[in-house]
Amino acid sequence: MTFAALLDQLPDALAADLSRSFASLIASNPMETFYGLATCHDTDTYSCYLAAHSEEAILRELQQRSNASGTPISELSSDRYWIPEWQFTDDSGLVSELHSQIWNAFEREGIDYYAERRRVYDAYVEGLRRFEANGGISTYDRERFLLVPWVHDPGDENVWVLQAVERLNPKRVSELFASTYGYT
Image 1 (cartoon, rainbow, N blue to C red):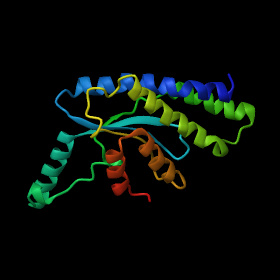
Image 2: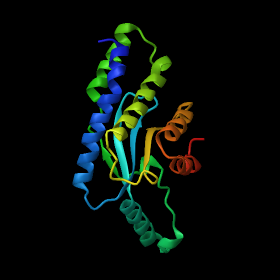
Image 3: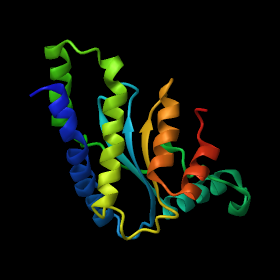
């Protein structure tokens, strides 16, 4: 299969994997109130995993910091949008088989991956959009729930993340994320 054909499959495959993975995460953590979901990528966008965080996880973090420092919880703050610290992950590898096929197509077709990685990232953004359109977060208050295609240690990709968050989220949510995003 060609790179273009495989890339066309990526959004639907990601939406399906996210639905399965997030439903499993919710079922195994029924007492958590999730407020964000991220697909996490390295700058090459080769591997991808799900991360999520909850209000209760923030309270546990603040309680632990309070106990260690003696500082009252009311005087502590948490960066609720710093994805690398999010507690819940699914490392099973979202769309991992499709990724292998895409990488093989790059080699087979002689495609410069770095010239095409934005198209791969945009396919992830579209997968998140389809996940939401298919009801993936329908039980959550959309004015408080963040969807983000996170890139670890981005270079130029930092702009991609901010643009994607703006496209995927209500204005209030994207503005809150942008105000705390550490790679600007």
